[in-house]
Image (cartoon, rainbow, N blue to C red; front, side, top):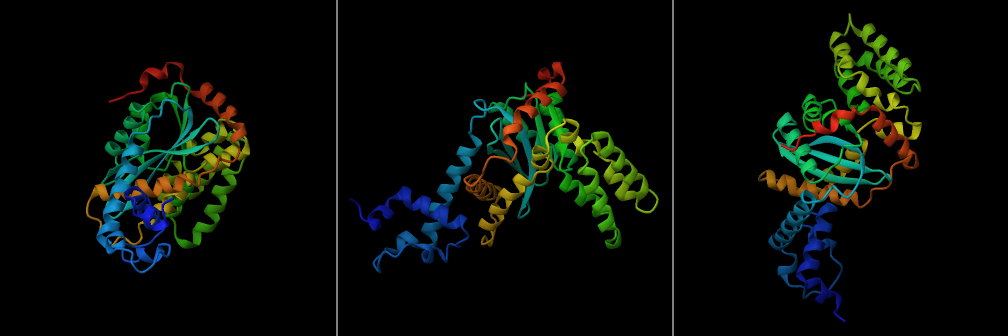
Length: 321
């Protein structure tokens, strides 16, 4: 039987160890402090800064390649969540899928200078080319970026039912307000989104926008933009547990925290490939801790609702280029 020292010298194990320790926030200079004690004769080649970096690059390059090659045709995804994360001077748009049995999976990512329509369209096209099926309808949860909304329409067509992230919408509205107005507007927004009746919720939001018109026209305009799409989960008549889960892109945001934590020791970002490697590795590490969404037993209700609301002719609208 190999000793722990001999096993650790195995190239594959060393690469995996470098990946795990770097993702847990150890810088290359501090890496040796995270190793198990193996005596004083551990060769420098195993824990030197350059060696750790080399093994980490190899591991993250492999993680990125595997993520970008994941076949998507074998699963039925009822939900697609899209959001962007800023890493250095790059934006990475990330796609997370929720299967018909409630499992969350990272589906893909695409890098660009900003969260623009070209980047978003490229990501969605890549998902479709890898087998993402939307013929039975799919709920797409997005932040407030117009580029994302346009890309969803262009690539997925009418089979995609869009839910605007309520967290992003509230943040955007409040950003147009002075401090003294934010508390009561935030309260009104949450009250409207907690309604169980679609028409009542829409009326409440419309009334709030009208109230804001004179004094805070920017906030009113922000609220009206995509207003009805913040209520999609209510319009679909989903049960409360599913509404809470699908009202925002929070599942992606929680995965982003792993990326931020893992990359906080990076002193200099060299290029977009490095950004992609770190982001992919962090996301896949976060994925290991994913649990089924709350309310997953009620997902058949979402599937039926999506089928009802998707246009019958829409399958021809899905584009692959």
